[in-house]
Amino acid sequence: MSDGVRVWAVDESDCLREIEPSKLDYEERIENWICNNVSVLVPDDSALMVIGRQVITSSGGRIDLLCMNGDGDLVVVELKRDKTAREITA
Image (cartoon, rainbow, N blue to C red):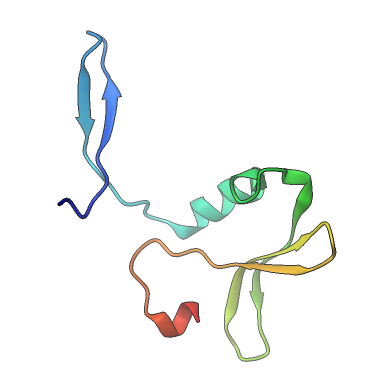
């Protein structure tokens, strides 16, 4: 059983070609993509609005994206590019 995801592309000769996996270098790029198109998080992009980026908390940590939904509830979006300790996401 594979523990990874395989991605394929159709090349110019109409054949499948496996694409080598690569990591995104910068969390900031993902943050920008989400801010520009919040619908990747929820089906209806009008239901979620980004109200802060890299918001410093009272404990000295940072929230990657602070959002508000249509009901006025706050939504915290924490982005991770790699494996992260449970304490950080908890």
